[in-house]
Length: 561
Image (cartoon, rainbow, N blue to C red):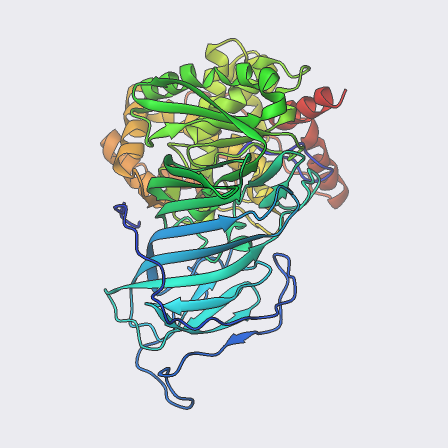
């Protein structure tokens, strides 16, 4: 992700899974209709229960097995994700009834999972408007909505190590108007041209029931049922499209495992621009039809960027890549898997290529760092953003765009200035690999995660040398391809590549509350943290003027004239 302009006081190991699909719930499942009040993410709704079909356990009898955990164990998002099972695949179907971007969207999802314990019941994350029915292995299941949890009780205990299938029918998702000033990312938005999903970090479950944490990656089959004449695009490769009786049904397959927060679905009056492949990687872009002449040429640079990244970290990890641009002010760019998202601000006539192109490289590099290799927990998000910032900056420097992108003429000056702010940033947002909070999304996606993460990589390169660092980068994205990995995993691999124990060195850089000495630069100094509350508040506000965030502010300023 590329973060938004800074507001006052807010500077800006599951294994890889094969593609497996399962049929829908068996005939005879109970269809249950619920009248569920609308609920936005974060709102606790009244408990609503579905009644199981005959044959469900009688009241008062406790089945064998135990309930799955309510959360997956993330420090920053305690209730996000769920325990007791491992999702293998999602078969997601969304239906857009009419050509109205503001409409409610209905859907069904079939989830193939494996129990990791004997499960008497389990949770799915869900904060959508409503749903109609739940079935497990083709049999209607009892369910209760509690806050943002959908608690499902199957007719029989789900045995450890055995696969099972969950089908949720008739869920409803409601798009919102984009708001660049919102304190959180809006996961489902509408524009004049259509609707778009952007679910990072915890918004997928406001759209569809899921195990909404990057630790549980899965393959996806995404089917979009839309009125004839609308374009429908999603992650992965196009598998089928048919038009009949005034409707077009399009199916995409995301074969490689994907975290739920990286889901992409764009539906509306868009056009798809196809470009020549790069080393076997198909390239397609999606833009509003009416803006294609202005936008399409600006996106062509991604072909050379794919080649640039492959030279440094190896083979692109997915089947295709491209960009989606929507006519809105989102306030961020987002690395959704195989199809990065931007708003038109990034491509306005007053925005130089020295800003646009490095941001595009940032999102592309996430396909390796953050998408293919996902974070084990959200505290590990520096692995995504620190690496993406590193490659953004080195790319900008190699093309003469660093001044536009960061405000500095060379990398050493930029990292020296970043180093000076290290203690203030750690005091404000926490260590690089241990953000203090995620209550506001920009506290999680903060400058210390981006530029502090890149600074830690710079320090590591200084410590082990350019050759070992390049080998580490390649081995990281190869060894953990299609998986979720932790900061400890990175430290262990770095030590193996360097042939020496780097744990003490990297623990200080990633978890220390104070900035360690910079190898090779004994003259670099760190500014002190102001002692008084007034001075601290002033220092935090002043961070908005630092080069680490100034280019985002300037980007929006120029776009708005």
